[in-house]
Image: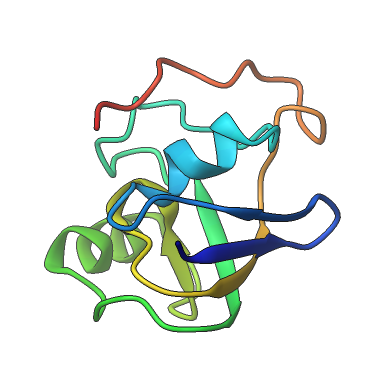
Length: 106
């Protein structure tokens, strides 16, 4: 099983193919996902520090372009964990005045 390391939270194993946003939330990371995992709000963005994910999708490109987000970040709602990775969440419930949002679908 792949290992996800989250700066400030530790490391945990995740079943291969699981959405990163769900892996984070299920392992105690209070990641925001205000739009419910539909790549609209960009609150679930993470910085990928090590490991690889698939190339940036058009959905992510469009969301980042509309919001003026830096292109080195990724949307955790659009990523599936297929190997070991290390990430840093950009927005969390604890670091904001917002609630997480609806749970993203699988």
